[in-house]
Each structure stands twice: as C-alpha cells, then as structure tokens.
Amino acid sequence: MSAMTSLALARLLSGGQALSLDRLAAQTGASPQTIRQNLGALQALGVRVLDDGFDRYRLDAPLDLLDGTRLRRDLATNVPGLVIDILDECDSTSTVLASRLPAAPSGMVVTCEYQHAGRGRRGHRWTSGLGASLTFSLLWRFGGGSAALSGLSLAVAVSVCRALKHRGIAGVVLKWPNDLLFEGRKLGGILIEISGSPQGPSTAIIGIGLNVRLPAEVSAAIDRPVTDLAEVANKGEGSANALPLPDRGSLLVAVLTGLAGMLQRYESDGFAVFRPEWEAQHAHQGKYVYLLRDNLTVAEGVAVGVGDDGALLLRTANGVERFHSGEVSLRTSGMGM
Ligand code: BTN
Image 1: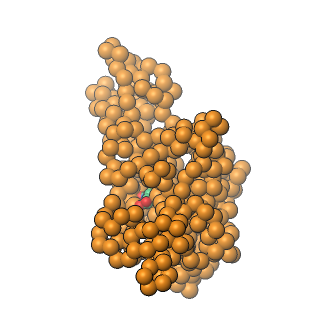
Image 2: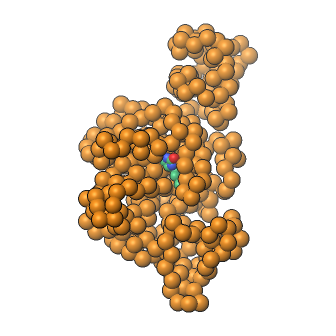
Image 3: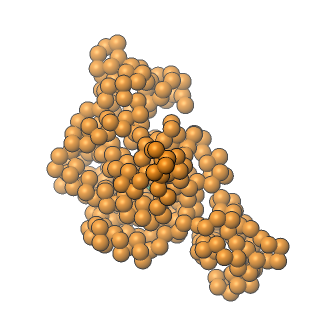
C-alpha cells in the first residue's frame, strides 16, 4: 500500500462516519483516483470500506488506530525509562530497531500500524493486519553476557501473559519456547535477536506480535490455525465476567510496563524466578510430545518442564533430556504441523 495515503484515509474514516470522495481528496491532498486506489489497498488489508453508491465512503467497523499522544503520556507515567517511536508502516519493527544500533538507547521501542514483512522464528513470516495486530520491538541492553539470555524469550512470554491477564484476558497458555496459544491456536509470537559477547555486555531486540482483531482475510492468509485477543476476551474465563477488549494502545502500554519490570528482575535473577509461572501455563506440561528438526522427529517423550536456562526437559527412553529452542520445534504429533 502507499503508506501515507492509505493510513491518512484510514485515520479520517476510523471514527465510522461517511465522507465524500471530494472531502477525502481535499483532506489528504491526493487526487480522487489516488483515493480510490488507496481505498482498494485498504480493502486488500482487510479493512472493509463501504461505498453508498454516491462516492461517499465509510468503514464497515471502527478501526482501532494508535493514539500517539495518549500512548506516550501513559508510557511516561508507567515506565518513564521507555522511549517509543510509532510508525505508520514498516517492513519489520525488529529490522527497524536493528538498523538503529549501536546508537539506540536501552528501552527504545518501535511499533507500527502496519508491518508488511514481519519476521517469525526459524525463518517464518509473521503476518499482521492494519490496526488489527500489535507489532512492536523493544531494545534492551544487559551488562551481563549473551550466555545468560537463553531463558529470556520464555520470561518475555510469562510477562506478556501476565499483562494480558491484568487487562482481563485470561486463559492464554504457552507453547515451548515462547508461543502464546488459546484453544490450540496461535495468538502471539516472540522473536528475540541477541548481539554482543557471551561475557557481556549484550543487547536483545525483543520483537512481539499479538493478533488483536484479525480480519478473516488476514487469518486465511496464515498457514496455521490462529486466533486473536478479541476472541479470547469474548470467550473469557467464566464468560459472564468477560470484559470488553481494551484498545491496542492500552494493551501495548500494559505489555510494555510488564516487560520493563520483568527485564529488570531477569537481569538480577535470570529465568529461574519465572520458571514456575511458565510451567503453570505450559500447554504441554506432562503431555507426550515430539521434537522436530527439518520436519523430522529427533526426540519424543513426556514434557516434564523447563530448566533454569529455558531448555525443554523431556522424559525419553534415555531419561530426562534437555533441548534448546534454536535446535528444534515442538509438535503434538510425529508429523510436521
Ligand atoms: C514467531 O512466533 O515466530 C515470532 C513472531 C514475532 C513477530 C514480531 S512482530 C514484531 C516484531 N517484528 C518482526 O518482524 N517480528 C516480531
């Protein structure tokens, strides 16, 4: 999409009111033809635009765009150490942050309304929708070495789950090493990229993607079963008490606030202090699972938990074996998912 015009249109229409083609053109400075093309581009991203037949357009549903002023104010109140850059569109917030190394300070956050080339673990793509996902990356500098960061991604997952729970979104579970699942479908993912020396200092770019309100077109383009926070909030744990889903900005502040606290604790105590909470939310704790490398089963057994370094502990025919996440991925059947 042409980020400037499509986003400008999305902002103008986001409140739900119908606006004429002329007004949209006047307010964006684009020609009517460009407006039409960009409305088409919005549709392709799953933002449904309705035309009343008289060149008046409105969105089918309100669009939850970030309010930069409010977001910065709330972050400054809750976590003054974080600095946030809010982009309309980028390829990947983690790539943007990496391009700002080595000058970027610890606590720098990059987020965007639409990420068009999101990266997942082990070379996978991460697909998101315009205003329909939270995609953000946080830079954190550690005095210690990269060797101590093997459990970091699991601690991040615990922290995200905690923040969601605080905002009334319960029932999310974890798949080793750091996927967030609800009813067996993927809700969020974490990509951690570490640089520095094993002895220290070291730097982590913590990239997090959460599906918030994925349009059907976006979900259909993802090659695995997915869910979103809207569905989790709707089903709620004891759905009578289900709370309305907070807006993306409030969710982002909640998650970043939790992360900053978690990272300080991780620096002093490592993953060990988060381990019981991780295991309590482990989707496969005590279950028989398979570990795959290049789509081939390399181990199978009962998942008995994780170590203080974040390694998966698997009871196999050889006893309890340890596996690190860079090597393998977990499945509930011997075939690739
Ligand atoms: C995974 O489950 O494979 C990890 C997905 C991580 C996606 C997030 S979205 C924000 C950040 N930018 C990226 O390109 N990736 C991470």
